[in-house]
Image (cartoon, rainbow, N blue to C red; front, top):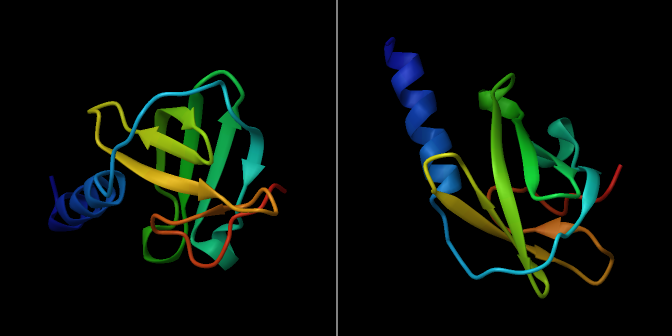
Length: 106
């Protein structure tokens, strides 16, 4: 693996390892965020699976995972179980994690 590959892997692991939390309902579906504006994009299938696309220095990196909803929080997990927690704000947008600003439904 190249140094870039190792570095990108560590950054992705760090992004998903931010926080872990509880369980919940099925949650959102659709696309949230703008790679250029928020640096991340989340594509929720409505059934517990999510695709995370990265922008900026990590442009082109795509990760598959799962999610669980706990009240106003969405807990996203990569296949290794590392995760991050996003908050659903009063406008229905996602905040927290590595998101710059708010990631709203597209």
